[in-house]
Length: 166
Image (cartoon, rainbow, N blue to C red):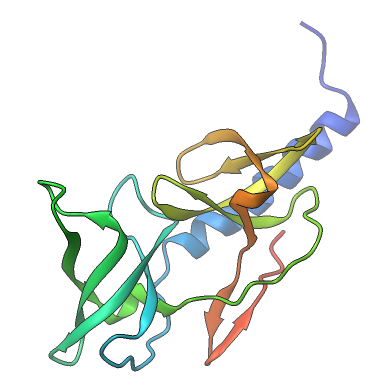
C-alpha cells in the first residue's frame, strides 16, 4: 500500500482537528433562553446515538424552572399516531437558527437534514452536485445534495454565531 502524500496527511489533520471541536460542541449544553408557549424551537438531543442532532419542536408549556414539555414537528410517538411529546431540559432547547444562504465550502461546519432532524457535520469533499459530510459523533461519511445542508450556527448570549472551528 502506498504511503499517504502530504496533501492526504494535511486533509486528515484538518478533519481531525475540526472533528474534535465538533464533538466538544455537540456534547455541550445549549445556553438557556426563556421561551413561551407555542414558540418554535429546536431540541439538541443528548441521547446516545443522536448526539449532534437537532429536532424542530414547539413549546407546549414550561415544567418547573428547568424543563419544557415540547411537541416535535417531525418525530412521532411509538404507535405513530401523533407527534411525539416529551419533557426536555432547558439546556437542550434553542431558537430556530436563521437561514444563511451562501456557497458551501470544503471543511465547512454544516447541519444536514436527515432522519427527521438536523445533524452536525463537516464537509470533506464535493463530487459533482454531492457534498460528502463527515459526522464526528458517529464516524459516518454520507453524500448529500445542497438542499439538505445549512450553515451550522451556535446560540450564544442571545445571538447566532457561525463557529470558527479548526
